[in-house]
Every structure is written in structure tokens, then in C-alpha cells.
Length: 263
Figure (spheres, one colour):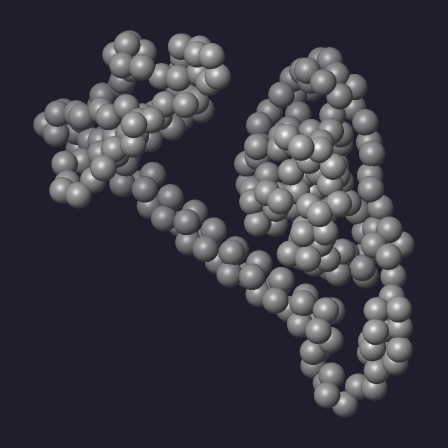
């Protein structure tokens, strides 16, 4: 959706993007935060998308569409109570997301320290031996990724499904985060898809420089433009995840990808 609804309370120093529509409500009848949560409900989002005017490139909202929206209005104190409860949940979600980012940064740092720079606990007294990659800790081995992980290709043909199923498109995979938290439910596939299992790694193969690498939290369907990576052995799982989500791996995937518009 090209044009977004921009709801704000009267405050100095706010600026509105030209791609936004601003709505101003009577403070005696409508709580702006309550209205914003209503606009964010999935059913309402789908309704707006269906009503959008379709331009040459992107569908967009306009004031005429917004004027047709029926907004349920409980008494103002009830609106404020609802908005307060929902905003408290939003704060919890934001706090959890911040913790996830911190833990992912720690995990990536730990992977590089132990498995790239070999600065693991006790490394000072650990002997090193020669290898095709140079000096590595004694007792370690050099392996190719394909020896400890595999690309899973469980094809699902297009058409109706027996039961609605969760689906992860490329737009759902977050950038620079292993935590996949967005998906949709579909009852029919417009094109061939892939099936992945809980714990497998989803790696977007189109434009890998977007750094879309996530761990599947459940069994699901996904775009055929995704590489599904599974560790061959449980004990190698963590190092596989660390490897394919590492900056150098993503840089290598970007450097070796082909195509001009969508490598």
C-alpha cells in the first residue's frame, strides 16, 4: 500500500510524509491511539487493500476511501482503556524484540570468536596444526558446508490445499534477524511452493544482500525463492546456523549471485 494512514495527537515538531494521509479526530469523541489500533486490525487492512485505487505502479489510499470507513466508537473512557492495554502489549513486544537483537548479536559475536578467530575458552594453551585454511586448533577439521548441511527441496504444487496452512513469503522474512515472527495463512497456492520444518534455516536466495536469514519456528510453507538449510547431524546445528547467518557468508552469497535486477 503506497499511501499510509498517519494519525497523530497535536504536538509541536511533527512532520508528515507526502506518502501519508493525516487524520485528525475530535479529542472529545475519539482517542487517536484507539483509532490507530483499529486501522491495524487484519480485517480492516484487507478491506482497505481491496478498496485501494490502483495506479500504474502501486495501489494507494485516498481520502474518499477513508471517509467510507465505519469506526466503532465505544465511550471515550473505554477507548482509552482498550488503547492502554494494547499499548502495554506493544511495549512488551518491543522489549522482547530488543532482547532478541541483543542475544542474536551475542550469538554472532560468539560464533566469530570461537569458529573464525579460534578464541574459544582455553585457546591460549591449545596447539594448532596446518590446514587448507591455515592454522586451526588441533583436533578440529575443515569441512565444506554441504558436508554438514543440506538443501531441502520439498515441493508443494500450486492449487488448493486440503486445509489452510501457514505460509512464509519473502516479505515475511526479517532482515538481519533469525527470529521469524510474521506469516500469513493460505488455502490455495498460486504457484509452486516449498515445505520446511521447525528448526530449519530459511535463506532468501533472491537479493541475498537483504540479509534475510531466519530459523523456522514451526512447520510451514514458503516461497520457492527460499533456500531451506538443514543440519545433517544435531550436533552441527548451531554451527550451521552461525555459518549461514554470518556476514561473510551473506557477502559471499551476494558476490556469487547472478542477475541484474534480482540477483
